Image 1 (cartoon, rainbow over the protein chains, first blue to last red):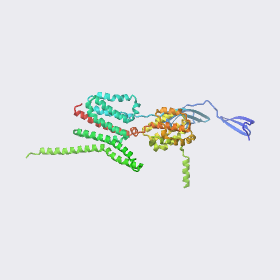
Image 2 (image 1 turned 120 degrees about the vertical axis):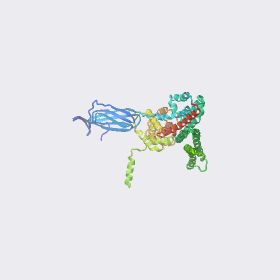
Image 3 (image 1 turned 90 degrees about the vertical axis):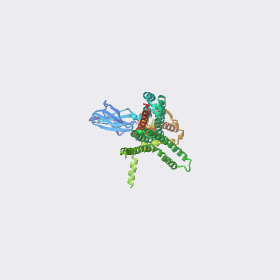
Image 4 (image 1 turned 180 degrees about the vertical axis):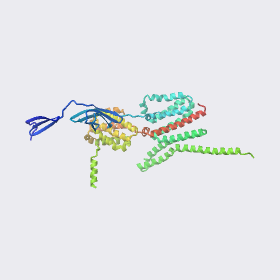
Length: 340
Length: 204
């Protein structure tokens, strides 16, 4: 039994075996053997570089050796057999981390540590910000019907251009306010600059603003997708049958306004129905969901408006023109018949 | 048959992912925030990343937390909800780790956090940098105080995320392109009608 702080007699010796030094301490019947590694002023530089979604490691040292890197709770290891080493790993994390590196070769062990900053990549496409200029498209409608195009374009686009000097101000706004603001501003500028253009474009700017606002309020892009389908069919009708342009335009305006406002009204009805349902007999989640489903069926009728109405209009025009063609042929035949 | 159970139990116990107190704390915050509906299907991923953060050796908590907040914001905006859950888990666990969190502390913090009066938690209307700075300098007086401050800071950060479905739709590939195409077709149709009318009326 030995006690702490008890003094013992000891012997110390050392020897060289090959390239290694061994030392021994003998005390109290125990032997402690130390194997020494020859320490030289060895060093290497390990460089870490961040590329898109990966971390690249560069190291130059006499091979062979094992390179170990500890970063963000992950251990990476390579057995390197070349003087120049380049390795890549998927970025383990982002931020500022402590990193430690070990190089272990034959009789050599190097260790170092440092701090690495892994920045988040911001890959932004221009299309991501396209929605900020979308409400400005209504300006095109007023420009198409105006003689004073330059003046109208200048006054319409001046505030948005100024706003782009402060993009964070635009991005922080809810898209609803952006859409409504641009719609009313376009109407105001058109009214002040060109009254004639205002009377022509009023309905169309109202349609664009109403459709965009409804989409934003409901948080549902399907509203505008269906509106877009209807607009294409109406446009085709107008191009194919230019003599019916007046009727097509009126039908287009009334359909789109009815559709956007109808969907909005139905959504309000949906909310009211759900609120009222909770006051009715035995309100449960299932009951309220049933009421909501019933109201949604009614709402879906409005959703069909921009699909059914232009198709019906186009079909009617095709049918009328076929009948007119037949009538023309009959009249021509009658006209060419010799008189008795 | 019992051997199957043994193998199954062994696999379960030797699984690298063991839910931690940090992941439970992070998930409790998410459940009480308005991003819950967005992250509900990705709970396991969020918890896994919250647990793995405990092994990280972070050198600068402020920068790392801010980087993860920006990553989270972008991922939610682009509707990449799986990545967003990962970043959310990391962010919430980093907030804890920045205050010298240990798992021992976590197990005593869980019941305190669960018994909080969530309606009384103050959502800070500050900039993200200000919220993070405040949290890093904050010195809690008790475990309950720490739980309140953590809930307040975490909910304030999550509150600022763009979870509005319309905003996310606008940044979601394909849906966004369809949306743009529809809007442009409506504009083209309206412009055509106005142009033709102006020509007929001799306004051009």
